[in-house]
Image (cartoon, rainbow, N blue to C red; front, top):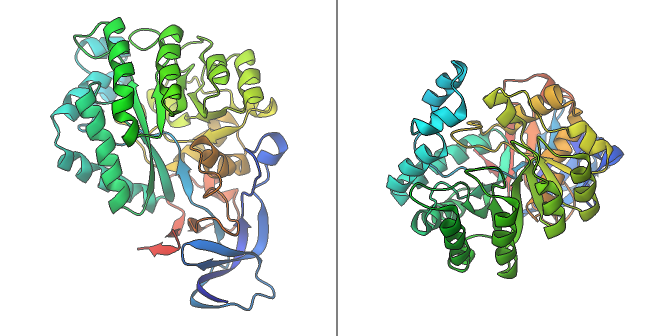
Length: 407
């Protein structure tokens, strides 16, 4: 067989192979093939195994001696389409100003909403493409993008249209999520806005695969309001996601299990019952350590407890201007290992195959297996433990997306 690309002599080829989301001991196994080789034809992987005995010819041969080869990162929770930035809030937080006071001063989510409403589609697209450039340079090959900075039909639709345009123009694959129920906009009552979101669902459906909601205390959405919105979304064919147990324990993790959501994200305040119910229902728990790191709250999701009790986890950035202004999945892995006591192999599986499950893409991406898309990283690291250990740098030497080397 004549290959397009042959990668050989990898010190570790991390396949991250799994027939279901990885939990417990399996999460510690990144599927290492020492002295590994990978064959690519068109946009697919056609060979994954040992370098010894490989006799394929290829248009391009890459020598990965002393390097790790692994799947591209999948960032399964971001809010990447927005205008403006909130560094002034960061300074206020350093000075001890509480978030609710910042909100009263015109900051927070509503500040981003105002700027995003005013921005043109072209302006938002230009900003997004630059963010995607940074993401792919850091190894992210697939990203989920939520709306949520519009809080009206016109702007929510604009955000998702921008994500769709970027998906057509940029190498990174984009999965789109409708988050109309992000917070309560100015000038609306909760009852009226919930009805507004529900009535918008059929109009937004052509633009989004998932529907998400921020289930939390005021000014966000209660358990009852979450049930109304997500039930209506499910009836229209949306897959479900939830911002869950981020700031308090509301039993929203149990609700995610009851609704059979694809994922419940954040989970800093998840209960033992919530862990058990989500694990039983097969809901992926998406942990976002960059949020706790940036907000300096010191309340990280109990990753070790969730892993030990069989809950499948994924790892993401939550990239946005307020709670995690970082597109760097390598940094998220380093924080997860240091602050949540995840092992490097667990962080890698949570950033690849389990993250693929969190966006319903596990049959296409997330592992290096024959027949899957050739979304591949070559890292300047001799073994996988080195990646989160040596933090603050970019380990990526080459990114291959859909079988093509990204320059």
